[in-house]
Length: 338
Image 1: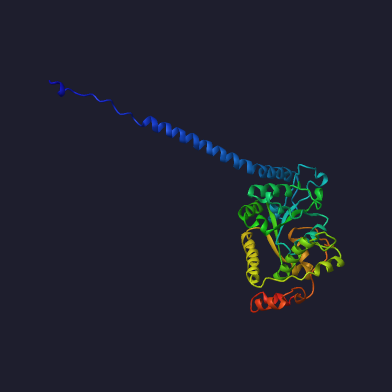
Image 2: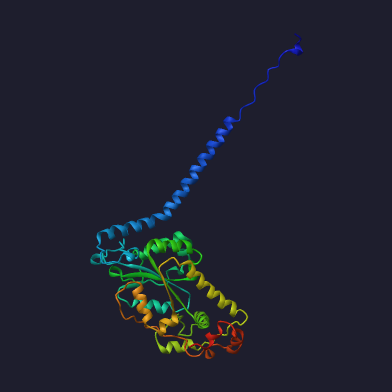
């Protein structure tokens, strides 16, 4: 056999199996790590809620709720605050509520009425600070504190509360995070009290007047959103805003749409819809609210004085222009309602 006819033995190619195994192992380690981090974050966001619910369940088991109707049980709570002891009131049932509204719709006045009830604590506009509504987890942390009676404000009545809540403006995260909030309300039996204003022209005047007062401070250099004397009300009522006729209709429609969306989002919750004008003109509405929250009936009072009253022709600087813009629209009637 000649030399060039001899067999040439080639080195075998390296198998990719080992490389594939290394890549697969790396991917599995990364996947496990990512899952671990995600679970850790979820557990952190849920830990406060779970602790809150567990505390409530422990106290609830110790209390006799035989006199509570079956349908009410999801809405009746026995908070176990960590900052104080409810003592002899530990078995007094508590209802949770939130007043959902828009600025200058009577929510401040309505809340003072609620707080005049000896067994109600409504803690004000607690989601005014942006960090408290940054995301659903932040919102839930605040809600847990409020409903566990661990949120302190001038309205806190602590031990013997029969209802605890706060007021929440729709532009303070309610619409942006509605899914998480509705889920919380349904899981924790929170009563939603919608309070709107029918006459959106009067609301707009109040918004503009309040903005003017913040800037000019005609009451001895201090800003007051609400007043408690006729004299103060007269000073603030002197301001007559000029409404932007070119954007007025779109603005009114936007406010209407916001309220409609909120009601639609919260339709699965236990809720009641109130209008400022009805509460002012018919005090039996306050009885309905107390019945809604299953409160012992009390005569509710407020020291707040209405600032803008009388006809709108006396309160709007460009009334004739506004009248022309709203002619033939659903909002035209607002101009002639007191």
